[in-house]
Amino acid sequence: MSIYLRFIFINFLLISLFLTGCQIKQPTPLENIRNIEKLKIMFLKLDKRVESLEAQSLAQESILYAQKLAKKYELVSPPYVQNTLVNFGLKNRGLCYHWAEDMLSYLDSKNYRTLELHKVSANIGKLNEHNALSVSFRGESTSSNILLDAWRNSGKLFFIKIEEDKKYSWKRRFYK
Image 1 (cartoon, helix red, strand yellow):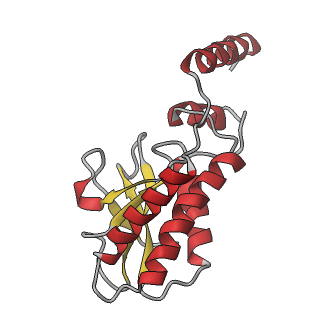
Image 2 (image 1 turned 135 degrees about the horizontal axis):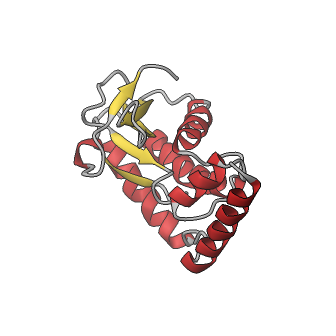
């Protein structure tokens, strides 16, 4: 890309960021408490053998670590703007697979006994490939998992039953 085109692109991007209000609004403590409780209940519903303290821990760690990564990545919103900045070398991290890898690495280190983390992808091999995590009862398939997508809402963890996600059709990636 020529210097001139890069200059025009960067100025366009900066103006766009200014006009879109790119600040990331962190959830309030009360929102976090509500979301942690909601996610905990979803984990507990995966199987009656899920340990309550483990469900609480994973819910809390997932929600708070996504917010920590948003700060670490110096995130801007919406996510496609962050992607553009990363792809042009103006930021180091913040693509969806960065979120998935970093979240998986952190959460796996907690060594949960009854809950298992999986890397999942949608639109594999296409330009709009998307990566996230899912959670299942240990040893179960991904069809009834809970999706954890930190990229979609710019660090505010999006979670839903994986089969209820109307935006993406998820498939498990068999590597960590």
